[in-house]
Each structure stands twice: as structure tokens, then as C-alpha cells.
Image (cartoon, rainbow, N blue to C red; front, side, top):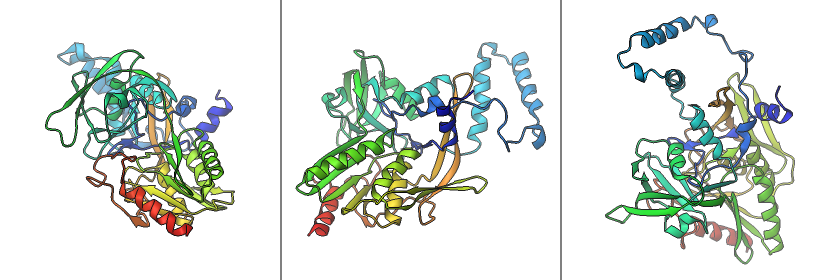
Length: 416
């Protein structure tokens, strides 16, 4: 029997995940990842869900699958390759892949456990956020300050070529993250390619306990506050609210909300953050495959100060929900480059054998009824990032970042 928490997690559309750009996944972390244990509360149904057709009703010949399995077991020449678990996993994986949906993924026990580890707030690793870019390269977004990765000299834009001399080309983001993480005190060897360097660079880094920050805040200059959300994890709405209050105590009269390189997270937290900046009314609508629509609304007074929201090509999913709500409700100015364009909702199902299924269960619309899936959100003021226009993440804290400079310029004009 499911606990109340499990029922809530299953019943509420719990997450808006991203799959690393092409998979832009849950931004994985080589630290790593989104620290929300929502998946642990999900349980696979023991019987078909209402409305889920059984195979016979659809004329699906499951005997065919059994026949092929029997033939393989009885006659395949390399009997040592006939591992029952791998055969079953391969069959399931094939079913999922034929959907051609990068966000619907079957995971065996090891992969699912790796995914769940992304949701731990504390972990052992090197403290470097990584993402898979549009070219399929696992790329450093930024090292967390004060971590082994930063001290070793890894920087935004570094492309990971190998981990402990294992070539990572062709591996998924989660697989690379799993290689990078490990017990505290152990050493991992990373080989990276860096823009401007003719040769690859090699780093030997001792893993440590890492606490992953999800919200950063500071005063950029007198009167102008800055809040950056790295991921929409559990309690992010609460953390943002607290940071905004602290900035107001420091004399903030306008705010830069930075959603760049934020791949998403929990739908519930996207709604909680949007409530801080959007007054009473719609935030996002979630539409099921049957067309049933559930609209999440703000019950607050919104934000009474000038607001600028920074976005880029790595802003996806939950961050796009917040940006879309602010843009459609005209409560702030969006600055930066077009967002990633992930307008679908995923849910997690934990399978009895410890594996899992992440599947797309709905799509969402912004308050004006826009679907941004595959399209993205065009900012009110376009300012491309330095370098290759979102081909690779850039250091958001680098001096002279043109997007941040423009945000401050716009806020100053509003405050005059």
C-alpha cells in the first residue's frame, strides 16, 4: 500500500525533467545532480492503469516475443551471451526507443540508482556541474566554488574526453557522471579538451563530500539584487523567497533573476518560484494525452519591484515555465537568448526489480496558451552569450558577460 507521500508524488505531476540537450538531461552533475528524492516515492503499478489497454485487446501478439526468446535460448550459437536479464532489458529498451522520445527512458537497476543519486543534496564527487551539449559532448558548465574541481582548474566549456582513461564518447550523461563520482578520498583522472588549447589537459582530482547549492544570491551593486537558480529542486521556492527578503533588507530596488543554464526540475517548485513573481492568475497549464487540462495558479500579490529574467539556450523545462509565466503575465523583462524548448512533463515509475521508467505523461502551456516544446521562448531583449551562441555553456560569472551587463542596464533605466 502506498504511503500518503507516495500517492501525492505519483498523483501530482512531480517533475519537469530535461534530458541533456539532445538529452539535456536533468542536468547531470559530476558532483552530481538534482538533489530531490522524489523518485524514491514512486511505485510501479501492480495492475494495468485505468485506460491502459492490455496486449490482447490491441491484437498484440506477445507469443511472438516468447517464441523469439525461446529460439534464442535454445539455438543461439554463443550461449554465454544469453543473459536473461540483458535480454529482457533489451526488449523493454527497444519498446521505449521506438517512441523516438528522448525524454522517455527505460533504466535498469544500476542506471536508475545512478539517476536517483542525482537527487541527493550531499554526495561524494568533484563538485563540477556537467551537461551534454547539442553535439553530444559532456561539457563542464561550471565548478562549484571551493570544491576539488574548481581547485584543480576545471573551467566552463571544458569538454570531458575520458574518465580514468576510458573514452566517454557515445556514453550517456548519466553514465559519465557515474564514472566521475566515487567515494570520498579516491582519485579520478579527467582528460578534457579546452578551447584555445592544442592538446588535451589531464587532471587528477581527489573526490570529496560535496553539498550542492541550488540558489545563489548577492547584491550586484547598490539597489540591484541578483538571484540565480541552478535547478528547481525541493524547497527552491522557499530558498528564493528567503534570499529575496535578505536582498530587500540590503536595499534592493530591482532584481535580476538568472535562469541561464538551468535545466529544470520539479514542476511544483517551478510553480512556487513563479508565485513569488507573478500575481493572482495562471502560471502554467498541464495537458494530458486525453486533453484534460490542469492549470496551476498564483495566489500571491506578485513582485512589486522591477524584475529582469536572464535566459539562454540551456534554460529548459521548469525554468521555461517560470520565464514563460513572467513574460506572458508581463511582470518582468526577459533578456538573453532563446531557451531550449522543452514543454513536456515526465513522471518516474519505480519497477519491482529496482529499475525505473521515466516517461512523458503530459505537455504544458504558458499562461497565454503557448506550447514552447521544440520552439523555446524568445526573450524580450535578445543578447547572445559570448562565444559560440549556446553551443557550449559559458562562465556566467565571467567579467563583462554581455547578458548580465544588459540586465543591469535595463534595471538602472527602470530605477531612474
